[in-house]
Image (cartoon, rainbow, N blue to C red; front, top):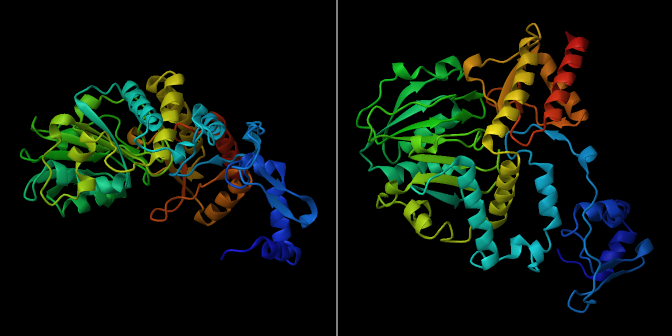
Length: 437
């Protein structure tokens, strides 16, 4: 409902809560935190709610006070252990904030750019180049920036790779692998050659024991199961050299080096390790492109996206920009070899705390396949789990509740989770055990 200026003023004068909210909006701290969302640099808010004068930017002086980058707000930020969308590097957020209104002197935000303009083309091209550097992706592969999440790829992969009667193999090590298999059944003839469901998805099979279909068009795995916390430490080799390996790497993408040449397709939602929600990255061998089923929707056809360099329609521009900033940051850290070392250290600290708790905390996953990214654990006294989550949140450690299908707790410690966050969690766990053990 739109309000006139007079109506808005009357509403503020007669509504205590609204006046308080308005005062919050005026505060320098709030304006600094959200400089482009709430108050334009040429907006004047006068005192005591007597009047509100808003000058149009077109009529304003051409000389305006530039937006100042606020001081670091590390002390105000929580340690966010969410599984996704997940924590992002603070320096990346600050860089994005500094360029939010005027990207590199272009006079506009990335959110306002034409996706076909030279400014955004430079952004998406650099993002691709940096990702290729991080993962050593050869020219034999196309890199696509798409939408729809990894879940959309559950359908896109069989639609692009095989005919409705073609056999495909699935190793199901968790909920996401199971969902991928069920979706593939609509467009191909999938076969589950191994499932960990009977053991509550706590292990990964020995590859030698797998009975593969020699005629399968592809073998599908989920490289890291976000919900159950199991991760492939190495990868199976398809029985037939014509069978390609396909991997959903959503929750461990760019967390460690990967030999891309072993895969026909790697796909990942960005919102866990490399950016905000809304971007899906597909790395596909070029010779696999161009064989989509006739009924394939245009937005699921890899050939369309590859021919148009991910610009067939308007892509998630700002999300791609943020991914690009994350790729830059990962390169600045020394690449994925160094990133993996940091992730191993964080995970080891947390798993050691669980394993040394004399059973007060328990991780159900077989040690050899424990995820470096998602650490599920339970309490010996389940009735204390809600208190654990609530008390931790009070200490600025949030999103520790386990997935609704599993229960317990889960700490997602992606690339951007600092070592200090894991150390604080471990210290809290020890204090909680001392109090309730």
